[in-house]
Length: 301
Length: 279
Image (cartoon, rainbow over all chains, first blue to last red; front, side, top):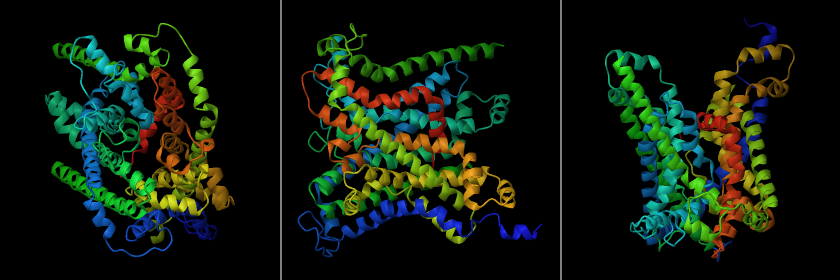
């Protein structure tokens, strides 16, 4: 096999060109992802603010104590957690059955899939503005307008108790179709033989779903759960356009507070410390999720 | 025989229910479209009816208020540049990482993957400083480079997996024997074979970058450089009693991707499914 001409070329290596091929992607990634990450950690231990932009001093964990003692930041983390968990749960609980049904031999299934996925194409910012008009309590709010027309009592979607869940409602509407598409791709990879065998054994639709489909859906559930949780923690656009964090601080999320404290108010150090806390929360969430999914896939085998 | 009949009836009932649900799902979009053509009085009196007249004046006003052609051109430039850079850099890195068996290559790949779990939003404070230090503030390239960095890990992952599983090494060997250099080999032989995964990356990055609001909000302060979403937010922020006038603005905001979706729907759904990477 190894002849003289082939010695020069070893499959599986680019030789001196390796660096040239990796460098462009690596440089952009380093400068705009890794360096900012390191600077965030650095700033979080300093007295860097709008008032003190040059002479930075090490301040220990002062900023972290301030972040953890700030009611606003605690509310923001709590809200983001509720938001991420509810949104992810809804995506799985609604998206999975939807995918199973739209995997059946329905005549309109392509049209149905396209319809449910449609909202995922739009910007969350504009979705937020649109749903503001739909949920509003003033006379132009679509839902309350319709409720009033049929003589039913109207409903205030934007009280401090309801506002976060009203925002969530719009995001469940927007992202369920996205989860459905991921689940469908997974479903289509499951061999039909399994179902035929189960059918011969006389298994009902429900048994088939819980005994065959669900265990094999582990990979896509993991993708939707992890992406949903991280995505939910990052929520910004839709809050910005729907409630701006209000009423009061009822819908403040991590990113809303970080934009305000860290950028607009000029508390760069606290913004950075808050960013690190945010990162830790995301890591813990991912770890919990991985443990749960690992237990699940272990229990199947 | 009996069960088959039963099953068919079940399918028809299921289909009917799903169609009803899909109609309900589409109501907000339908409401958005019909309200663009109504006056506030008409929209309040019959919110879900078809508009009684076709009045395009609201669209003309929105088009001018949003400086739509300029905002559209800015958004298009940012999206196209980001897509171009991600496809070029991502495919090169993904290819190199797929064709190396060195320890360094493995570590570099893991290094890229780490970017999938680190939310870039946590770094907005330092990103703001870095963009300022590089004198990129208010330049579309601030948004482009940050968006490229944010989307790079996923692109590198997808390209690497694709080259690894689909592009035969034998083909490259043959080209090598024919005297084809590494760079020429990549661009003339490997690159064209990457079309399927390229489509996936292009679709995902287009949706992400076009809909990205936070990076333009942070880095593009002057109106001349801003994107469609900033124009929507600027104009809707100014509330007036003429509230249906806001709807053409929202419509213009979603229209480009709406049209993209209507024509490319099959590919977009396939692309999103193929691009889902566990984080």
